[in-house]
Image (cartoon, rainbow, N blue to C red; front, side):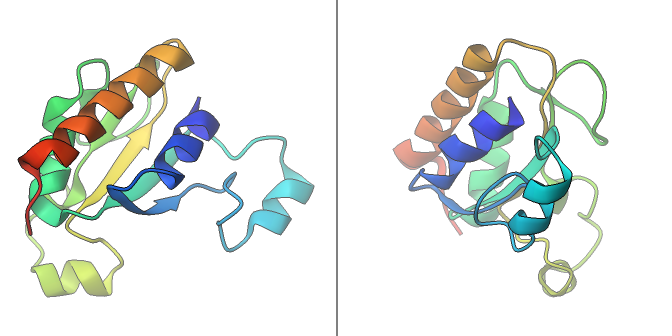
Length: 133
């Protein structure tokens, strides 16, 4: 499921970057390909619209649940800039590689088609005008 979501996200206009070990764009994709069959169930991605887009995306999801930590049978999502790292300044977050539009997702056991549809719908809402700086 995470592999399918990474593929969807890598081709989407609202997404600036995808961070998933199974993605061909990952800096260590060659090592992952030699050592693993799949890249794992967690991924993160940067939305072009920054803080507003990240917040709008996680709030628009219907199947994935907003959670402060990732792991479990359900798909969970977190927006670090407004949750786990909200106490950091934007400059400190940026220095740590945590952009305002960064979203982390842990793919659960839901049907992959349902999760892909949920993410596509949420990205569509972000693209439809919920984005900003």
